[in-house]
Image (cartoon, rainbow, N blue to C red):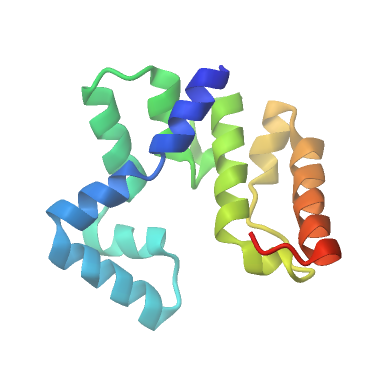
Length: 147
């Protein structure tokens, strides 16, 4: 499970590389739409393409024959509660890491990260997600570390 989590973590945004390299016009439209309307890049991807980079990346990884747990983690890392998986350590790990890395501003304040605690609870990890969020917040506030 550790190897699958690591692999999924490395490859979770491979779909962005595909979009940026193969659909340059659409990728630029996605970036502009997200910026001008203040929406997430995922929402902009759905509006422009009808799918997200997560789905594109998962499709590629499936064609390469990667393990299904890696493919599913890549596919659902932004929306784990929408996943058909009842529980998945790799998906939980990649989702929390994604939320932490993309929401450092929230860690510097009292805002909460966009962690899907419903999914973490389903996996039995609810308390661990909150502990991790608080640990990162303490690290940044108490010693001024810039991540």
